[in-house]
Amino acid sequence: QVHLVESGGRLVQAGGSLRLSCAASGRTFSSYSMGWFRQATGKEREFVARISWSGGTTYYGDSVKGRFTISRDNAKKMVYLQMNSLKPEDTAVYYCVRHQGGYEYDSWGQGTQVTVSS
Image (cartoon, rainbow, N blue to C red; front, side, top):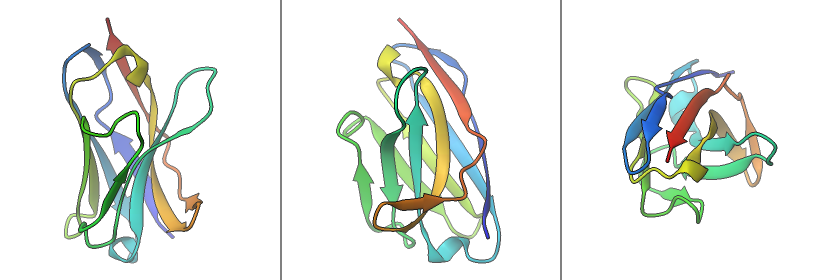
């Protein structure tokens, strides 16, 4: 089992940058791909990014491609999401997740709020 805690969300102006962090506990962290999702008020949850267990492969949602970068540090059991050129539509609660394969994700954290002002 993996327990995930997100941090780093805050209010930021459009065009700004922010880095989210996800701290993981549990022995199997480095064995799994990890990801980020987000959910804006009144909207469905949206895939943001995923990174393989080694960090060698990454995937991004179309809306963040070229602006966001996911990374991980297996020694520290951390996952990061660097967000640049932020837009008001990036406003959402961001969740760190473990990828179980296919479309299966689990171990959702409590989320961290990102608010981008115009």
